[in-house]
Length: 165
Image 1 (tube, rainbow, N blue to C red):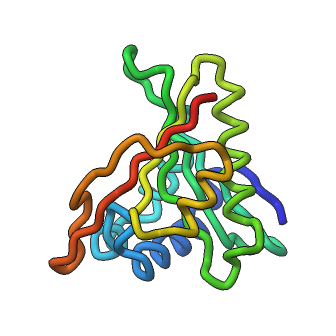
Image 2: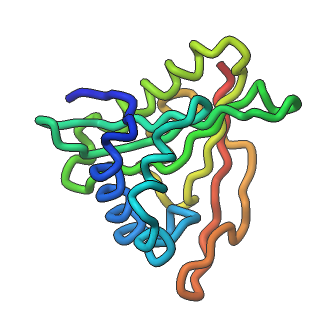
């Protein structure tokens, strides 16, 4: 297992896993497969270029099997915060440590940025495996966003979590 920050030259791999994630688990992402499948490759490349955004990839024998993105806030009043987005591991690779290692690397990166004091994330309330992972890493629930997402006339609540670093 190898965890590394994805660069623009990984955009094709990233696009593939991102679209699979949106298609297979629409209830856990605010974006939709129908929206992102139309995006040109350049859009995915640009996501991997930022200096305030870091997408980590988990690799198994050079195959990208999981991703998570850490975004550092830019606004003056929010510069002490970072947010975790878009966590996904292929189902056949779950429970093998990829998700945990992705999160550990994202947290390490945030801790290296001196101004970061808090890391936020939102997780669908009924996703017990993900919530258990986040809790095991020190995240605490601070609220519920009722009906945060609506997928095909079904609502999903988000559990809002924070880690103080």
